[in-house]
Length: 137
Image (cartoon, rainbow, N blue to C red; front, side, top):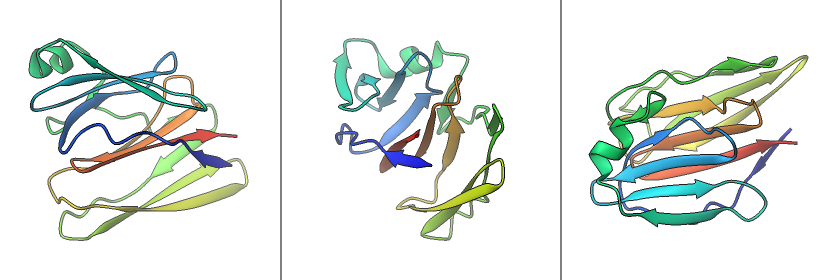
């Protein structure tokens, strides 16, 4: 059901990211902004934008400052409970009569977000030190 995409490591500490749309995710850390192009061979481009202004310009931004992730779309449902004192989050992805659980390692108790993409094709799991993207197959 899910295939993990080989996203290259692009930051030491993620501050925020956008909900995937049109095969892209925008993200930032405290120093740089990034464009992440999803697909078989994901590609990362470093942008010249101020990271805080850049990520703040998106209505669909998630991360350290909150935001509203997509947990249900096109018959897919994502559920989890984040406890900052635990070292992982169990993310349950349900589709029709099947479900899959992803054990996502959390290295920071600051924040965690799981979101589906606008089109329902991708799932992003992220916390300050780890960013993973899955494609529904």
